[in-house]
Image (cartoon, rainbow, N blue to C red; front, top):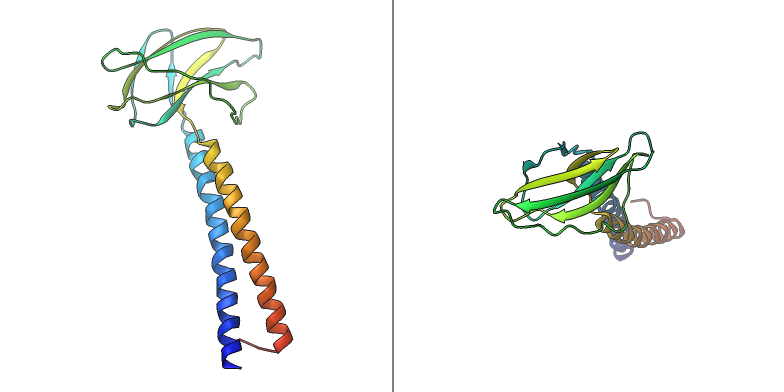
Length: 168
């Protein structure tokens, strides 16, 4: 009976730990994504603007077409030495706005300082950090796996505890 009690406790605690790990694995990347999305970044007017940001982070160029009439625009990004920074297509994006779109992304230069020059017609432009969507998706998949295993162990623990009449 003592061996069954130890196994039952171990099974119960294992289920609880896995379920808690699943919750943390799910919440952490979503929190980081929301924090990045909440950063309003820096507005870019009609003149080049220099921005100081952490180096080696993904930032985006956002166009806000407030009246949904369509817009056109071009932006360039240069590091502090005047060298062009590669601008690329963001791929899949998530937006909480009907009018603001993430059009381009780039990696901030090593020193963090860069200059943005945008020519936009019928839209306002800002640069700011971009949330990491793949990390959210990977976190959700890992959380689902941990949660399913934890749920399975928890159900097994409840069934075995009930069938033995153990009251831990």
